[in-house]
Amino acid sequence: MKLPRQCCRPGCARSAVATLTFVYSESTAVIGPLASSAEPHSWDLCDDHARRITVPRGWEMLRSERGFSAPVAEDYELTALAEAVREVGGAGRVDTSQWPDVFDGSDDVAPGRRGSPRPAPESPAAEDGAPRRSSQSARPRPGRRGHLRVLPDPTD
Image (cartoon, rainbow, N blue to C red; front, side):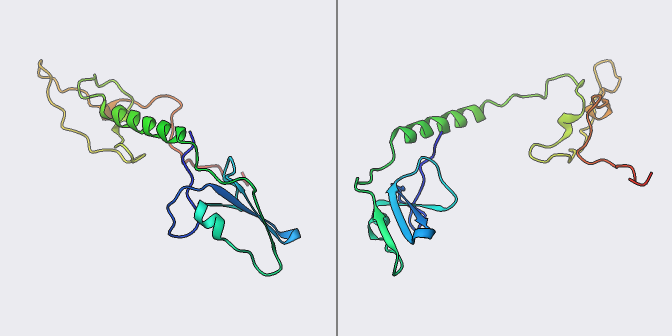
C-alpha cells in the first residue's frame, strides 16, 4: 500500500506531483512527473514548487511538457480502509486470565518490554487448599534462549 508522498520543501505539507532530479555531469535539472518510488537523490515537489523552482547560473532546466496531476485518490481510500481495520482489530484483545498456568514463562514479559519480567502475582489457593502453580515455576521451552550468550575464548 502506498501512502501519498509530500513535497520535500520545508514547511510545505501539500502532496507531491513532480520529481526533481539533477544530472550533475551535464549541469541539468529535470522536473518530471512524480516517480513511482522515492529515490535517494531525487526530490518530490508539489505543483506550486515545481513551477517556481529555479536552477543555478549556468545550469539548464528541463521541464516535462505534460502538466502535473495529483496522485490517484484510490490510494487514499485504501489507506483509510486499512486504518479502520487496524482500529477494529486492536479492540478485540483476548483475555488470558482464565487460561491454565501451563505456559512456558514467555507470557511473564510485559507487553512492549522484551526480557523485563513482570512481578509474580500472588498465587491464590485452589479449591482443595493446595497452592496453585504460577507461570514462574513453569520450565522454559527447550531450545529457547535469550539473545545474549557467552562465547568461548578464541584462544582455547
